Image (cartoon, rainbow, N blue to C red; front, side):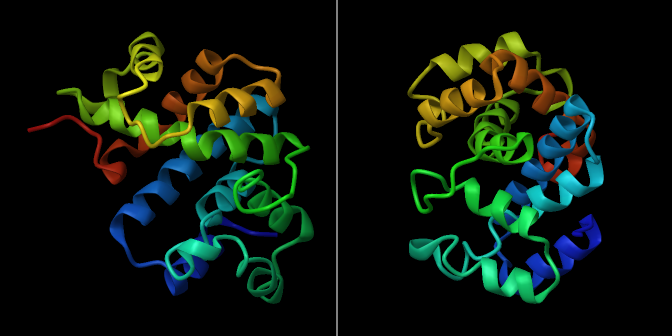
Length: 187
């Protein structure tokens, strides 16, 4: 089973771009919060979240096509590999998210991008970001335009949750990582 330490070791072999490490950390934080929401193993979900873009830097045009075998060789479980592959459902894989872990990863991958962008706009960063402020940014299609809102809505529907509810969980999960994410208070 993956641990946060093992995931960080594995990602360090394939990923060096700082923005990708920040994104991995954001997804890790959000996945930990989602695990807590569902009463699951927080560290396990964080480990899967951190590793979700394992092959992206090396193979951006073949994302997730170079993930399963290397992770299997490193001892990742089939459940973990399937969850990682499922976050690309409809874009670069046909692995449909079915478990709460898979649905959460599918959803928060994009959602954390908008949360991060919204937090960067604020003097106090994410530390005082409320879900109501986030939702205003979410509704503005021009804000963080590259983040796929339809995918987020679909993911939330799969989870049986509203965007507002999932965003609130993720914001709270990301707050303790504000400094690491570069979205703490501006000096």
